[in-house]
Image: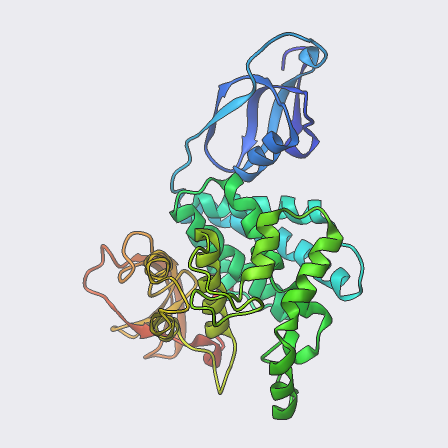
Length: 389
């Protein structure tokens, strides 16, 4: 490397430094022009797009010369599942660690590190923008002991996937996805039955009592977020408005929100969908199709156009779903972006013979002799999908 040039991790880059090239990345970015980084926002944008390290010219640091600002061209499209999965695992693991630590600090009335959460979220968003399927498969198949952590991660993944589909830039999505991660922080200081609605130790009486006070979590969440002081208005809006409804049947304001922005219209659907498919209300959670049907019946509460977009993007068999084929074989849905009814799957089990098989990638859009019969509930048989990613 030439004298004066130094390769540094993106986390060490500072405003004012002169970037010559990108030396390590997770996505597919090309330098459009070398130049000086003007602000932390530029650095955040690079992190969100998967840039890991850059080459800087130390000899240019103190030169007060008019030059072009650093710029890059975003050329990443759909990165293949097999290529993105390891980066998605790394990003999800890091975000889970930071989010868990943040939630535990909130539970003890301690301040959490917003910057650490922000940077972890940006790596997570960057992975989803390269290919949403790996991160979705991971968060949908992983068991999270802390219900609130799991709910926040899944909501963030669905939300980022939808913003990507609607062609929002990663930097536009960042603060909204932060809101998804923090939308229920008001519950963290409330009763255990509110924090984990699937808690089997909660009596019917306690559950009924919780219904009267659960709405308080929005007010508490806003108070916590305001105390933190460094969260944006977009993030705060998600915390404050995720239970509002178009027809005024929501809370806390109960106002008819026909002018609700697109991001909130999407997130209200995302939040309700995850609750329907994860909370055992009256027995067991709903399946994906059942949840879609229920949401479609609530067309006065939720934006039907946004719901249709959500269904089309996430699919009938979302990444991370175990499916039973007509042959009796069981597969894990990896990527459904090509064909929702004939996704790319990994065969892992033979239900007819009741034994595991050597994992094999199987593209149903090509293998037309097979088709999906329905969802397969493997946990009852000791088949944990997360082990096959």
